[in-house]
Length: 113
Image 1: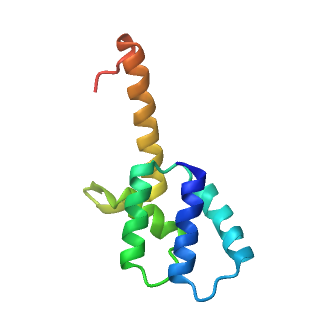
Image 2: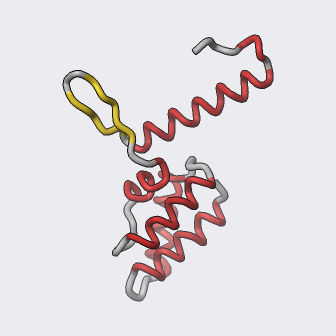
């Protein structure tokens, strides 16, 4: 994700969702959020921003932004279903994208799925 675009979007949240935001507070919050959310792909980040600006009442949490970007995913098993954290979904997607790049460079390394 582009860091400047991220900062611009977070400042938009601050001014849309916070009452008279303190610039130092906003800058500090952006730095923390960046460390947690920087691996989200641009297209999914934009989806999260649009969703949270439209539907959120307050400044979104890291979790709310992550879930809005990655969507809800569940593991189903005979004992019940378990919600997969958005961070896990993101890491799986990054790993899948890396495998695709490797397979494109050298088709002989393709793993049978």
